[in-house]
Image 1 (cartoon, one colour):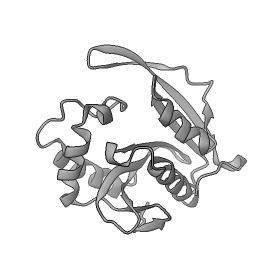
Image 2 (cartoon, one colour):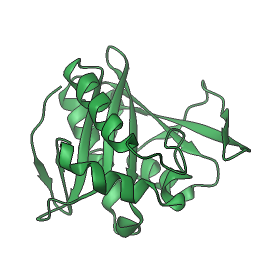
Image 3 (cartoon, helix red, strand yellow):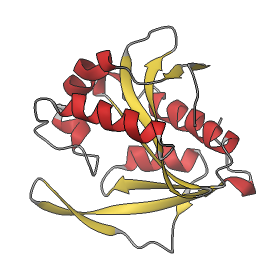
Image 4 (cartoon, one colour):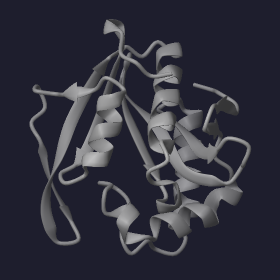
Amino acid sequence: MRTTVADLGIVALRPLRADDSAAIAAQVSDFEVARWTARIPHPYPPGAADAFLLDAAATDAAGATLHRAVTRAGDDSLVGIVSLVMIRPGVAELGYWVGRVAWGQGIAGAAAAAMIGIARDQGIYRLLGKVMDGNPRSMAVLARQGFVTDHEAPPEEVVRDGQRTLLHSFVLDLTAGGQGA
């Protein structure tokens, strides 16, 4: 799965670069960003962004994932990341985060829509999305793209910062006119 820079109105997606490390670390070190993800630790350890970038490059090269930096259109600075993780042929999980500097501006929705378009172009017919309990903004991002509750996947219990919470599953059938880009 290869794409280059895609300019999509208010956002552009581009491949991740080694020089994104500082921006990633700064943004996900914000507890309010990390707390809504299932995988980003808080506090964010030194060197974790570099390790993430190496892993993302390797899994992208193997075709197991597709990670893209989210930037504002006309500005190359990373404000988030959007990704696809292949589950099986034709099925992938959509993931994203945006830094607090980009909250409430439609950035997450535009990035999700763009990645859904890329997924469709890659022959993916079913997308999964997961959202932490208590994160209505992220649930709204997925709902605006046509995702619905995945009744086949009950909520998962996860532990974040010593607290148990639920991770809700959503699904988008791209063969049934799911939105995206």
